[in-house]
Length: 96
Image (cartoon, rainbow, N blue to C red; front, side, top):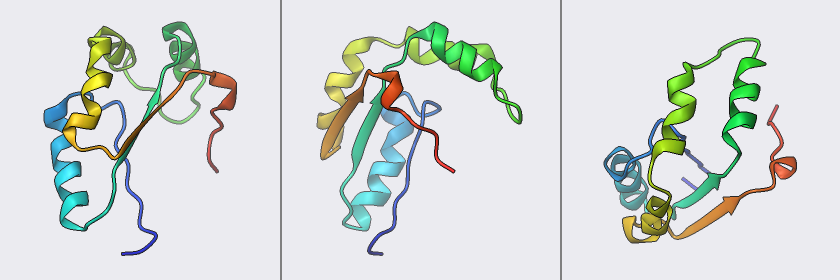
């Protein structure tokens, strides 16, 4: 399984939602890394509105903002090997 990567996104904002992915990674003896994109809500809403192919419901965009910010501090205890927070939106580039 060398070189195999998987990811979870904001649709998995709770520890319960992430636990399955962490179990799978552990069973495959793969490290897990959390990357938290800390973008302003207004920017996220604007980017979602500009998506030509698949916009998500505004409530879905707002949900992570409503989550307690201290949830980030619990990520290492969940089993993530590393947690990276990206705050500079200009450093986030789309793939493809």
